[in-house]
Image (cartoon, rainbow, N blue to C red; front, side, top):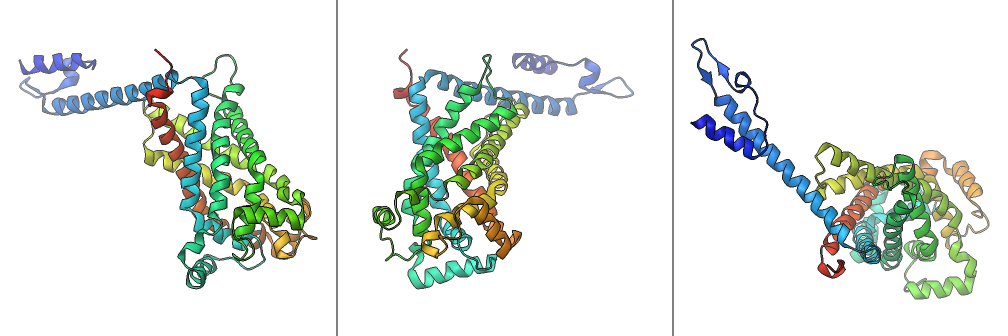
Length: 363
């Protein structure tokens, strides 16, 4: 009778019942031992129920997205991107300021020197000074991240053909690169001013508007886009590799977990890997961009006039490791933290927003 109850329970949960010989061990007397079979059945039952729950959870998210019209999808992407960018950049602001300090001059870099810079800043100017320039960073990153994430979703739709639901790898990379180019084009002056504020004393630029006014009056409007070319060249591999890696890891996770949605920690790890690969692929161009952006306050305006000249001068005087890849170890700390936090926050906030009935189509 026990076996009949167990079999009915298995059938109820759509678990295939194997032949009798496979369900137990037959001893010399012909008696069937079902103890190990019971344990295996319970385990299999739990796994089946868990997979059903995860699949239903993933399908629920898909159904929620289907309820959201296109204009609200763009809005929720913009809003979630803004939150993701602000949270990520504020988290790593002290590390970012330290990295920029070494990028824009020819001081030898080491982790010890980086921590000494932070300690000296705290001692002489206070802890909050490590976040100097973060207002400009957030002012830039909010529109930057909002445009990047929202445009990425739009580029993905535009690049899909023949009713595809998932982009192939090549177009996945292109969608990420185009999203990066779109966001940089609209927000570059804010990035340039932020870099200036990060490497100057407070009495030079008291706040963001003051920095814009002084740079415009003293150096002209063209200075606002100084270093734009290396930025565009750098964002193509950076954004392309980052979005490609993150989307690919999520796709792989879905295939291996029965369409289970990644947990926040899994999203954070996937984003961290994406950030690590993306920033490493474009780091020399990031060095050139920072040198060109801050040339007006470091006395190198006549030297850093083009991408090629800037890279050649850095290579000639400082080498590859100590010049073109200066501060990369710091980037390997802050980059994965920032990108992982950004991707994870975006996904979580966007999913939360799209569950709000106000953003749904009228039934």
